[in-house]
Image 1 (cartoon, rainbow, N blue to C red):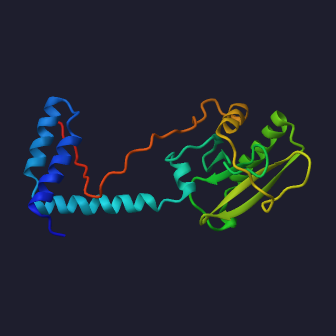
Image 2: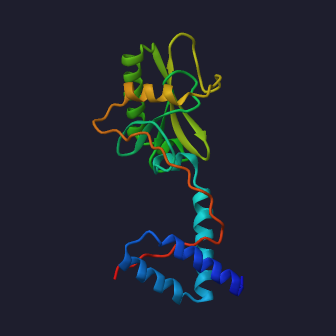
Amino acid sequence: MALTPEEILELKAQLREQVSHLSEPQKSSALKQIDSLSPQALEAMIKQQQSTSKGASQKGVFRSIVDGDIKSFILTENKDSIAVLDIKPISKAHTIIIPKKPLTDSKLLPNSCFSLAKKIAKKISKKLNAKSSEIQTEYKFGELIINVIPIYDKSLNLLSPRTDAKESDLQNLYDQLKIIKNPRKPKVKTAKPIQPSSTLKINRRIP
């Protein structure tokens, strides 16, 4: 990929815009770095950013939840797993236990994952008067999770119909069911505008 003189000028202009908010000493240093970039260095930066973007887009939904990349209502966690409200629940307060390390073999699920599931089931029974809870493992999106499905009247399982939970309902359940002193707050990320593939990032160096 050989950059034309016009593309080089455009990319450097974009980089200058990205550092415009820095303090004067930092901006001055960054601008010198930008001006000194060769066409080959610009091409290498483009390839690196495209590779990083591709890798990020391939991250699974459960990994994104564990890493805090997407909005979620995490009720509690232990060293091996987190408990998060399902956004497409089978019943009220349907919760999934996600191992912090992706697993595909149920034999490798730590006992602490099931202990967390039982802890959540007990909390739901106490706070929401659920009669019982179905605790079932499931292979979904390429990895294993544990479902805690509260039972209020009729029997339910993983094949039962699901609904789309309202955010306000999830927030209300979160407020009732969070069971650690400092639970993770629901994470809301402001959507970033999609940048052209040629937009680059540079390392900021403080002189």
